Structure formats: structure tokens, C-alpha cells
Length: 156
Image (cartoon, rainbow, N blue to C red; front, side, top):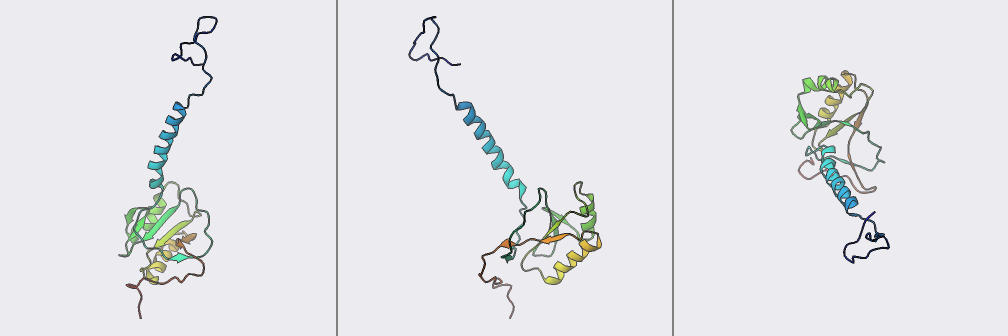
């Protein structure tokens, strides 16, 4: 219940007349706070390693709530999420994760200039450690568009 002081209109009891308007200021305040929370939280949910992924025209699949990313950087070093990991410590780091199990998918990201043998070596490490459910991560491509290598990595 709200009252209007501006017109100083009184009803028959001598009280202020009720204003029949909705006060939207608290609603706007709540929406602005939620907007700020989502603007801060959204960038935190992605992996920010600079990797030039190849493209694929396959239909994308739904990713889980908390995916586990293993990345092979252009300098052939490994990273789990955004943290650098030695090859010898990869399996123990995966085992040490509280929400990771052998039946969950591991998402493997590799830069486009990483040699095929290095990619297969990391997949072999994962398989030897018991992580047989591996998905390769690519960028979404346009159907019918050529998937050419960049000029600096193309070999004659």
C-alpha cells in the first residue's frame, strides 16, 4: 500500500489516498544485480588457453555441466583446464580431481599445428591410465567450406 503526497489528496478518513501504481524500482535493482553476476560468472566457465582448433561440420553434441579439458598447446605442453601439467603427471592429476571418474568423458583439445603422433601419444597416455572415453574438440565449421590449413603450417 502506498500513498501520494504530491497532490495531498485526502480521503474521507483524513488519510492519504492510495496510489494504484506498481513500484518497479526494487525489480530493476534485482535485475541489475543478476546481470552483473552473470556477466562476471560467464567468462569463468570457459577454458581460455589460446589454441587454434581445427573445424568440423559434424553436428555438435551437448557438453556436460563440468567438462574436463586436456589441451595440447602449440609448444606440445599439456594443460588440464588452464593449469599446465607434465605428461608424467597427467593421469595422477585426472585421478586427483574430486568429480572425475574413469567412465566420464575427457575432452581433448589440440592446436591445429600439433603433429598427429603427439595427439595419439596423449590419447595413448589416457588409455593406459584407464580413461577410454575421449572426445576430440573442434570448432564448428560451415558445411561445404574447405578446411584448409594455415599457410605457415602447410607443407608441400
